[in-house]
Length: 70
Image (cartoon, rainbow, N blue to C red; front, side, top):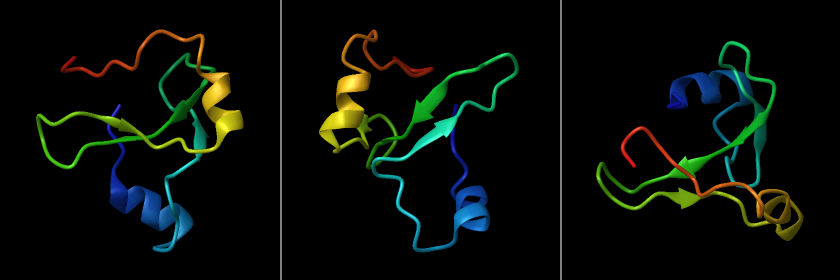
């Protein structure tokens, strides 16, 4: 799912950081949480925006991150 930065700024303000943030999934019938990924440009490697060791540990047992293009 793609995040619209305009929506994030409207909800949280321009000083909000996506690093170490979890958000409830907004897709129909999804009851989980999501975290953010970033890429410098289209086609480049995706980077997980988690730095907090406690948050990263929660995701260790999940399958690898996948996007619509991977």
